[in-house]
Image 1 (cartoon, rainbow, N blue to C red):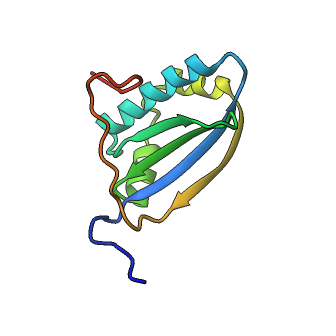
Image 2 (cartoon, helix red, strand yellow):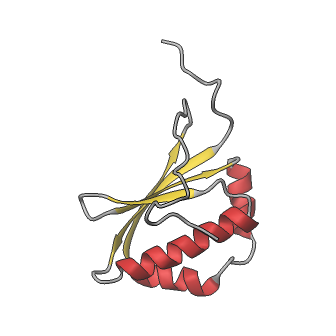
Length: 121
């Protein structure tokens, strides 16, 4: 079987997973959204999506142009120390990062108009 690789580059993709303290969900989403937007706007991230699973685990799928770009983007001082602290305070447990190898990509961007939770300026 041939792998479809013509529509993917060398992007670095990962999934992050957390269990949150009860009642901290809104605070976590607010902080995660702020950090994600800043990493996208200022550090070269290709963005991220946040999901809540039926198992009450929160999942974030993130992309960067490369592993080196991610390392460089996160090696500098925090884009928002207050938001990082707010996010950390909401997390009861962090599960190990899962590094993903891009093979094929047909995910369309979410329209910016009318989608709940979409980051806007």
